[in-house]
Length: 224
Image (cartoon, rainbow, N blue to C red; front, side):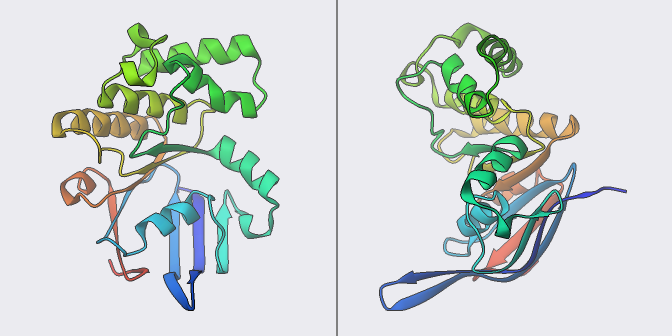
């Protein structure tokens, strides 16, 4: 029997903008188990980004409870939340979010610094991860010396740096051509086969079909 890794229980998220209140997510109940590969889809404004922030412990709910490994994160201090997030979740973003002045190797080593991994171990692990994503020949290149696909592969390697249980990908192929995007998705499928839980936010339904489950959002609610 698969065990729960993330659970949202009657979760609401509201934002105040000027005189109005935006109900970005309301009444969401969701259970994600270890080994899932889930795609979250929906039109613009459906609450996908808010949902990603909540699932990834980047934001807290206005109402309701969010559990990460059976721990209710709604009651944690930001410093505690950051530590748990750093260990449990790896993030891959549409815009790569690499530090432009650091090499591929240094970018991958960075998350390990916050988990106080020794320098030699950081370097060895980062090299192994870049080799895993077929970038052994690009260790010392800066992001602007890499193609979009190479940058996203560095981002995937960085997401794996602390061996997280969950990989959260926000429109991971949004800035890539279709062929390169296909390569990135194959990487996620392989990581899922290795036991990683993958949560992917996308507007691309063809991409979403690569996942094991599709969750459709509309107006901040799960409709399918």
